[in-house]
Image (cartoon, rainbow, N blue to C red; front, side, top):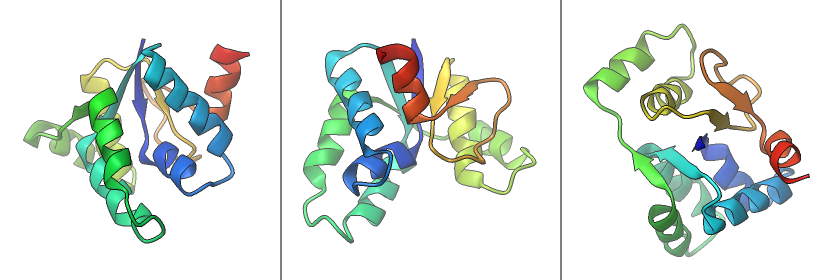
Length: 133
């Protein structure tokens, strides 16, 4: 199964947000190669920018992601498609388009306003309940 991870899943784990336990379970899945996990290249940049304000050394975590997930880059076509979605969050739109291009079965996000259209969108907690309970 192909699963696309939204940036907030990584930040929930790193910054000890309320969804940290379910994010940790997803990282266990990554380590065990239970599924194929995808993310946008901009996710790495966003993690670095946001988390390094609170975590002095973030590079090891970014290397972990780089070594264990499939990183997708946006193309002119991806951005064109993202810009044409009637939703104000361009980053979410791009992630959605990249997930479509990778034929992902799910997008895991804790963003309640994430675009729900042709791919199943599920929270980290619901994903863990569905597949690990």
